[in-house]
Amino acid sequence: MLTQVISGSIATAMLAAGFVLIFKQFVEKKYRPSLYMSIAWLGFMFEALFDTMHVIAEANGLPSAIFLKISYISLAPGFLSFLAFVDSISRDEIEAKRFSVVVFLLSINVIVLFIPGDDLAINISYNMVISIGLVISTHAFFLLIKIYHFVPRSLKCASGINVLGAFCVSVLYLIMNILQASLPGIFPPISRLFEAAGGLFQTIVFAKNEQLFFILPFKAQRLIVYDTKNGIALFVHDWSKENKVIDEDLFSGILNGMSLIVNESIQKGRVQEIKMERGVLLINHDNVHTIAFVIIASKSSQLLNQALGAFRRHFVQKFGSNLEKREPTTVFDSAIDLVKEYFVFIPQF
Image (cartoon, rainbow, N blue to C red; front, side, top):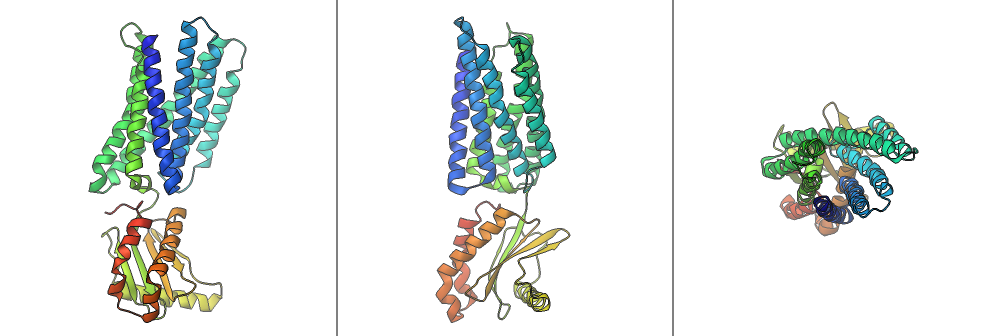
């Protein structure tokens, strides 16, 4: 009993620390994955807390089933948020069908907990939450392995620690849980520590390496700022040297000419996005100066569009006087500082 209380208390503290750490990142950066992760850790923290209270109440001869039931109910927001987190680091939106299935199963689990007869309800609920948790955590484990495969060399170590954390949450936690249930006298009840420690590892890695959130949803290749009057590139930044495009001035001129033709032909305003078979061009025009901002990426993304808009505003604020004087393009080289500030989430390949 004492071991369970100690391990449960430590796990609760670890999950609370993870919640604070990743929620702080959300407050500062407004990343959706960090919000989902923080809610997940909060749900898992309450599950660990109420399970520990159940052990204490049971040891003191007090009604304890209610604490165990609340701990299982606390897993509902935890699982749903973690599933949303897993989807958000693999694509730009949540997969509705899979999310709906998990909502349905967790709703049944809550209903089951109100079945008369505590032992039966708790046993059914336990098997349900273990099964749901196993599927979601295993899916996350293999997804993080996939991310490790695609990250640039500079992020390999951090991504490897992330995979180790996921291994603790899914594989080691499951093995220890089975062993301590099958051999209670041999294996102490410390499986929860593996789960919480693995979660904390992942939190620390994601908090310090936010680029890992966005390895799979999209891959940004190049940023171009060009003058829409003469088609001359003012500033270019590459995140990836793969599939290097043609000369930036020629590319800018072609893109500018195409945009003008489309606008003049159909009179529907400026081109904001061009989709291709394996990529997309995101275009943001300034309303005062004759300049446009373009990102070449594998997929469109709300975050990329928001960052491009913020970059445009601060680029104009910083170089507005230079734009009016038509100064040499070398003047805009210091815009690299703005790239580091507003596109910090994009990894450099």
